[in-house]
Image 1 (cartoon, rainbow, N blue to C red):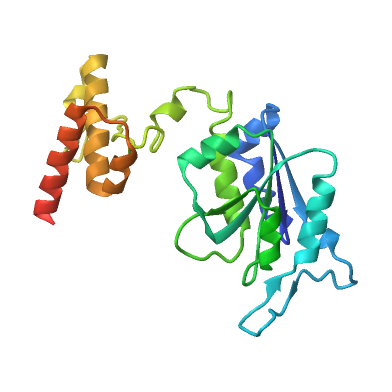
Image 2 (cartoon, rainbow, N blue to C red):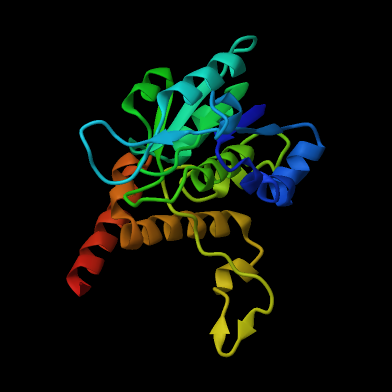
Length: 245
């Protein structure tokens, strides 16, 4: 897979894209990455990418011309899925990360200032928001999306089951996990995890995922795949937590 970014601060990607899982994926040839400077597609000596909004208002807007010309060049010889980051985009999720991970090439366009001239979105295949808050620029959003996608690429993670058991993979939060020592400052690891009975451990973990989701993110339950018995566990947990609230 190839991921490219277009932004006014391409140097922000130097370290994050070179370390940890993403760095190893690039070393293995499982992911290629390039950060492009939007100012390379400006037409004046000041390399201007922003201007005042028509009709007045606070701040500066990203101009349409550099973005259009950047995409013209980048897409001239090879197709790609173009993603813009905006508070008006669809909320980013594990499901979206999974869809994007199946693309051969992504171009992530990162805004700054007060956002983009609205006309740039005619070039978008997808508009994404990380949540109901505002970032200084889209570079951090691009890093988050790249990290989430990279983990899903075949061969990137050492344990191929890691993706399957992580939070949101099946619509639920991940079950609690523990490591050595088994007791620390009177805090003990649940005895079932020390039993060696893998079937019972799997059942315990599934139940804990349901309970944790009911307590912290009950909104996720409607999209989760639960059996009738599991729904009974979830409803009892919701009733209990609501009663204590």
